Image (tube, rainbow, N blue to C red; front, side, top):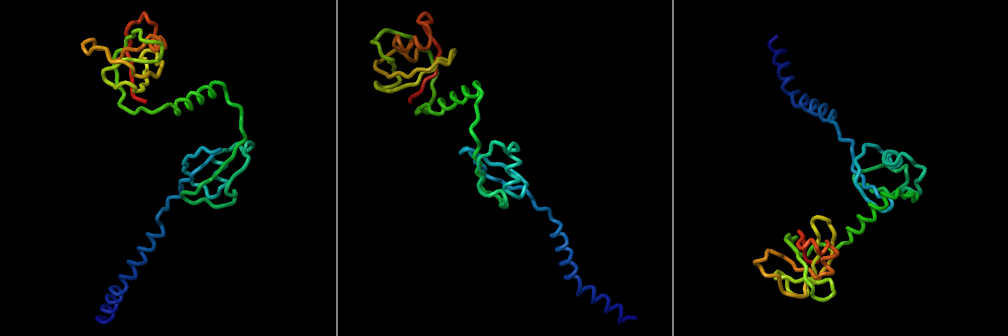
Length: 201
């Protein structure tokens, strides 16, 4: 009896690493693998990332663009498997754009083409004076020849001016003296002074 208890205990001790290994394999096989992938989708040249859990290019196209009647082409082939980071190209037929959407799109494109500020954006007051006929201004802050973008705070109207004179005096609290034609693009002359934002372009 003593011998068989020892044998049993010895067998259990020797089998312990095997049991631990089997438990580990069981747990590892039950791990959940994240089925989602990030796919780079290019539609008529516009690119964006999409997260999906589908497996093929065809399933992905159906997921992101269910109305396939306006699809001209898909690359790679719709039967190919999707992998994380794969790029999918869709070419769609051109469609008529609503007038409001077209107007908003045009404004966004124009804004994206605007020059970016080459300085901080400053705020202050602007007045007007008569000094020639160009889109010019006087400043004590910037040297002559500096090109500024000036935005009227109240109306959001914008002009570009070139500094060609020195002034106004600091004690006036005025940042820029705009030439008469430049001021008139932002506000009526009767306004006298207006709040502006301005920066170097």
